[in-house]
Image 1 (cartoon, rainbow, N blue to C red):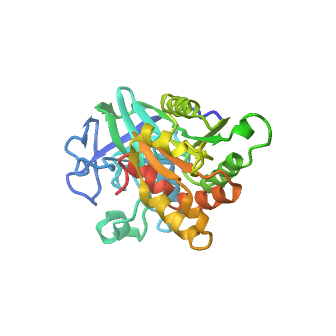
Image 2: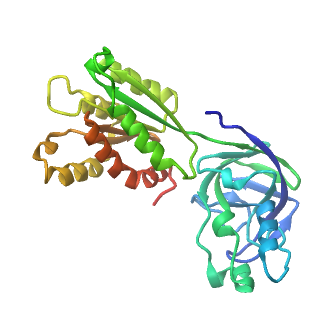
Image 3: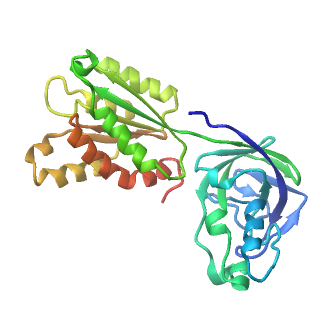
Length: 315
């Protein structure tokens, strides 16, 4: 699936020295690793910069019963843009203004209520649904009327099936496709650009290590493996993954083992693991179709938050 860039421009640049008040326009703004110099929202956190599309401001004005026309900066956004559909933007996407590069870190927000000037005036605000927030990847200067380029960033997910028989063509892999379908269903309608791939290999340490290294070089975000998590002589998956990742997330799999082990004691023999390396998440699941469906169902309950945390966006 192709993820196309899009071009737009800056309509207004806005700064306030206090939070929750209308920002005032500037001809230029200077950004560094903390955000916009002199703006109240700068700091070592993920919501350094707020952005809002002029198209969404106009839409809000049209729906307001008072006939009031709202102006850039009144919603306390730092950068007002035109030409980019914010409804298509996802977390981790990038927006570049010449040398300046921002990474999208949050979609929408809770309204400040009585602490928001627009909410006090008209009883509602456009930012909770239409505003986006970003952190600075590369600083510099942005000028009013500057061109901007939006760069979608796909969330890359790879499923690796380990099976001597399936890799030899003796039977059709069903567990790998079951994981993929579960994840497709989970991400459907969510604000992520997903890109799936899969591979079948034998229960071989060298092959799995090679696949993990390829995932690392290909910047895969989430790796799911299926098969090889038992205690048999060919069950090598957890050992290779933990040696590769070095950072384990034990609670997820411990919980799943205990939950299903109450009904099926043999489930406690699974050596399934969850781990991460850098910003890549790795989940090693058992080989049966029933098990991967159950495991994936539980993992997706915390998957988005786990993604945010590993990218320094969660708490």
